[in-house]
Structure formats: structure tokens, C-alpha cells
Image 1 (cartoon, rainbow, N blue to C red):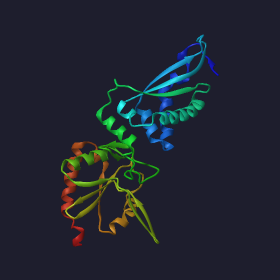
Image 2 (image 1 turned 90 degrees about the vertical axis):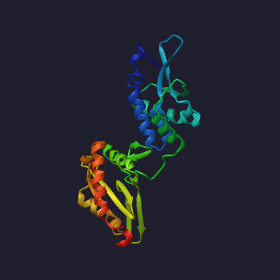
Image 3 (image 1 turned 120 degrees about the vertical axis):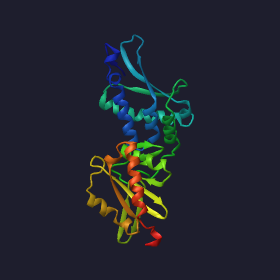
Image 4 (image 1 turned 135 degrees about the vertical axis):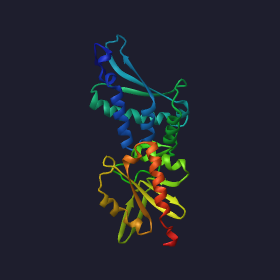
Length: 265
């Protein structure tokens, strides 16, 4: 089966290659195929049309995905190719009817990924980032990554950097659960700091990243306050840059000094 086309550049798949691959990767991620989505997102894509001998009818495209050799060696190539091809077929049926593709992965020793990209992708492939962290809100999972951790905003990342510079012990976006006959809590504070026997919740409040009102925030964290944990709220604007986040961390440290350790309350 094939389709007639006067100019190879007129094929929808070739015109909208990036958009079609992005949509395919999104659907793979949604369906839980994290490795395949990661490989597709970071591969260098090459599209080769395969015509009949007279170069009149397009039989299919060859989609060559050039991947870093270190990644290629860690994955089941045949299984990844099959999974990507299956999802791509569905996307092409919707976005480029009549056009077909066969998927091939190839190790490319000329690729030079940034070191952080290699590290992030290796974590995807090896399953190192399968974690509860940043997944407390199923409708709004944290998608930004820094230092192999998840965050929801650059403001949170700046705050994290500032705390790390002074050696604070902390947990970003931890999922905290309490179950019982008359209680059912599942909460995800932005940060928890641990300092001199004190446990402090840090909430970075932003209209763009948090839709709840302050009163709702207070209510959802009450079960933690019942355990003697204090909470400090920060306007996200004060962490818009790393320098401003450093000033805010210094202010918070002064506040924490005035809080009594849990053991002495």
C-alpha cells in the first residue's frame, strides 16, 4: 500500500515531524512508557522516505532515531522500537492519514549531549527516578528537574539551591501520608527543613503554581501541625532569582532560631 505525492516535502509527516514526535512522546509518557518516551524525546530524528522503484508511490517512511551509545546499550532496542512504532502509528492515523513509518534505533557515536541530559536520560532508562517525590498531586505532578529531583517552578529550584549552599538538611516535595479510621491525609509540602531538632514546613505561595487560598493551605497542613511541625510561607516573588532566594533563606533562618525544638514543647 502506498500514496501518490508529487513532492516528498509535501508529506505531512515531514512537514510536522517535530509536532508528531512530540505528540507521540506525550502519549507514551501518559501510558506509562517512560523509557520509550525519553528515548524518543532526546533522540536525533532522521526521516527517510521509501518509494517504489519508479519513485512515484511512497510506501513508508523510515524513522531513524539516533541515540547516544550509552543509552542504546542499556535498553531493549527491539522492544523500544516496537513500542514507539505502535504509538506512532496511532498518531499518524490521526495527524497524517495514509502515511506510515517504520522505526529504527541506531547508536550514534557523533552525538554530544550536554552532561546533564545524559545523566537525566540514564536515570530514566535505569528507573532511578521512579519515586514518590513530586507526585503527591496526581493532577499536577512536578515536571521540572534539577539535581535529579522534581520541582514545580523555578522559584522552588532557586530556594533549593540557596538552602544547599549553606548545608541545610531538607526534603523537596515530600509525600506525607496518614491513614486511619477517622483520618485520610495525603499531603505534599513544597519543602521540609530539619534544623537543630526542629522540623519546618516551607510553602512557596504563587498564584501561578498554586491555586488554593492560604486558608486552604493552612487546613491541609493542620495534621502536620498537630505533630508539632511549624510552617513558614514565602511569597514566590522573593525566590524569583537565586540572589533573592539567598536573602529569603537568611530571613527564614532567623525565624527558625526563635522556634523551640519539638522535644521541648
